[in-house]
Length: 151
Length: 183
Image (cartoon, rainbow over all chains, first blue to last red; front, side, top):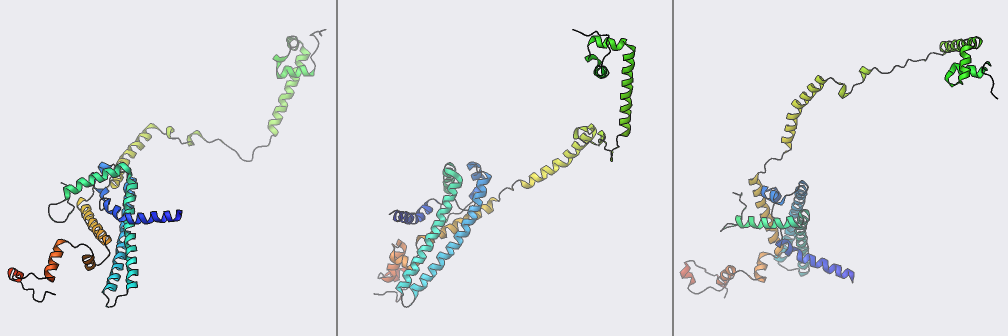
């Protein structure tokens, strides 16, 4: 009974991870190096150091996980483009691709969670506010978004 | 019953008179002063004791090694240094220490962040993150997405126009779509 409940919770978390990660991604890059962010959030040296380590580890993991997803995706495409369909192999490959994707989403969510832990509640809320303001100011009328140096 | 004090002191009283005369009773002290024979006896004892002392110091063995206490001059203490030396040391420390301190501090102080490079990195990271998001949204190949999910309006119009050409559209557009129809 308990085991089932735990598995349900794990499955629910995995299902919710991508959505939550997408909705709550912290600012990109090493945002804590921005003078304004560091000043307004009053980040300690320890917090900055932990964010640096976290960012580095997360990016390396994401690069590897992204490559894994792309590899599985390529294999699936090959199976789908084959003259004769091997349904069983396709289904198996699709599951592998889904698993790779889920692992990547969990890593994204873990980054968000660690940033939240390092900053604490108040500073994280403040960061969200600053980032929202920054995005609104940086958003051009046409074309893709691009970071611009502050005036 | 008390004995008369003109009685000569015994040996103990005589020795006490040599060691600590004040400890003797007053009468005994007076007797020792006034009695010539007792005084002579006391002087003889004193001379004998002095002779024993001289003999003792003469026959005591000399130490193998002479131990001498350290001279006061050899003890160095910061506060025993003359004032002018202290002042000179202080001045040298200030002259050497201040530039060194400033130099070390200037090395430790972080250089101002290169904002342009930082923003470029943020931009690249955002693009990378976008790729991750789009990769995570759906794992199916593009064609399968278009066929299975709701296509956007541009794709739908273009695709339907290609599959079912509208009569007269070729003339209007000026571009032939020969053989494009499937029906």
